[in-house]
Length: 121
Image (cartoon, rainbow, N blue to C red; front, side, top):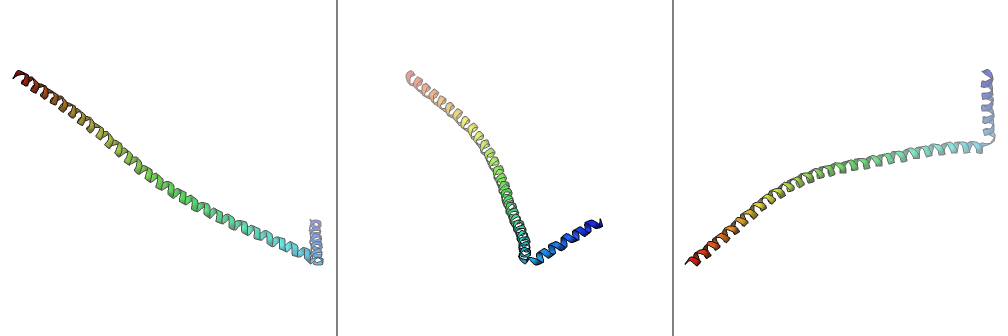
């Protein structure tokens, strides 16, 4: 165990000596770390914005679907009411047709009787 710690310490010392001798390498490492942190922050920000946009769109879609369902319910009720009115009007039209047929028949009977009476005179 002590050997592993000593080896780790030797590696750390050699890395630190190498970076002291080549400051450009240290600057590149620091720049890479800063770049990775910036990209991570940017990805988090974009993800948060995108999630918010999807949430807003989902809310709008849910609101529209709710309104459409309400409108469809109203349309169904109106169609049902109109269907009932049409059926009632069809019954009334049938009754009017029957009444007109009876009146026409009675008119024909009256005209026939008048002609019969005129023949008798």
